[in-house]
Image 1: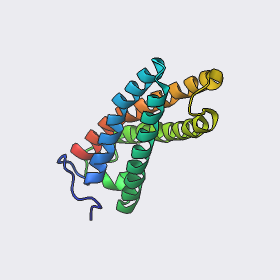
Image 2: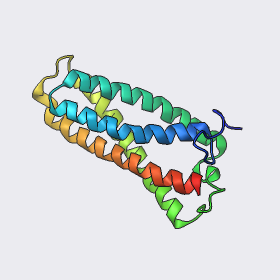
Image 3: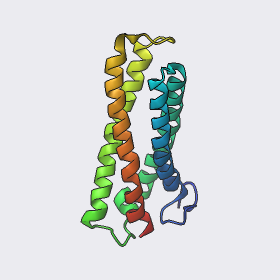
Length: 158
């Protein structure tokens, strides 16, 4: 029994899986915008966008993981796909999972460290480290967003 009703995108799976994939894909342009804010030294808005995005995505991912666990995991949920058990679907599942886990770890650590290191008015003291890990987190999150699309298509559409 789906936790949030059936898919509103017309796929196999439930509405929360649709929300999860749309959220991860929506993060891509938000992160690029947030990056542009930081480049223009609009740090307060950059911070607000990052914290808001982290909270919203964190809640969605938490609900998504609870739902996925309740249903039996990604392989159970994609069992009806024509691509179930193939190297293609497994590649997209594992690649997306690697990006999702690594981006979550880097992003959470970066947010926590930034909240500790940067006062309300940022000081340039930690910018180089923040910039390095910010770019890494953004690239990993972009990878997560990009790989979510073929995983969703192969797992829930075909």
